[in-house]
Length: 454
Image 1: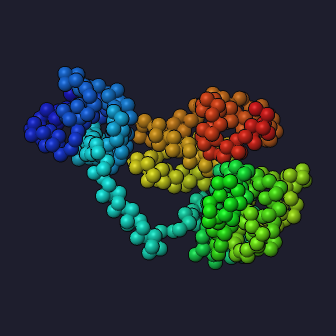
Image 2: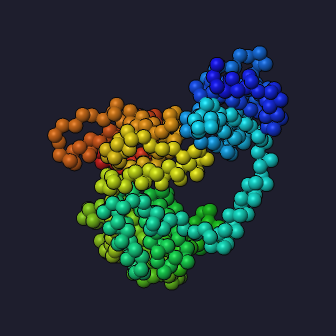
């Protein structure tokens, strides 16, 4: 008999009755994550027959999505979470049961609300509080500052110093770096460190925009400029960023026509809306970013040389994650805390084996891929720490070929091919999902598939 079973059997039945009356269902498990006690309300909630034997069964056989085993293994409570049981969303609380010495001998879970409308006053109060904080300037209007570039490696410290100096100059900046290195984070950090910090920060991913919408999205449109345009016309992202910063991500993907109009903005500081014959003066600082070799595109005749030099006034290159491996432990700690806040799950810790694997992996998707792998691990981990297989190490090992004494570029290409193939297979060749798994944009995934001739 487990310690929890002994406790329940020796307790007054009124205690269990009291627990049942305080909520809409309660369940207790022991240290081996087996069901020790289940209230009648919980049994009814699960639509289980009253005579169905449940005691001693693994809790995950009854509740496949339960987080109670994690509470047992981590010893950390989950005070408020949303869980779907039999297609009904519920607000639940999970608590570890501990001995006086702090060791965990079980856990108990409660269903407090199966009608989330009862929680609406709480959501409304939170929304009012957040609005008040914003109005009092206690929350940042742009999300990131330069200090949010986590790490103290030499390459990162260098780019942070360069960014701080560049922020003071009101000129165009070009951010270079592989996909997932944090170019938008750096752009927001530069904005918040600049004299334009009180103005708007407007970001747009050029690769994600359909070609037919790029011009109106960037430069705006007058009424009736195209089918579907509003009667009052619309402001473009450049006008919305007036007095602040406009961030153009994946700048290499814009067409020749848009390149010409953007050049006018940079040269003359004026913009012409779609369907208009009037030029409008504009005060905006442009930060562009690309993961591609713009100079090579210029040489190939695919990007305007004059625009390239206008953009390349202050180039800043973000290091790839494999170039700053010493930052990985600090980055993981930061990201795991963020994931815990966003998901409501207890913060997870990395095992020494996981840290070693993370520092040896080649990271084709950089920090974005690191975040995605950690998020996956926080969901999949079944022990009291994260291990390499929780991060997907086994999947990669099964698809990674043994390397011979090839050149560094060949090794990188082989590793990139392996990662792409593994992601595509895992996502049944759904390219949108594969790009998300790798932490890259869909446009970047298509470019790599084409370049590697997959």
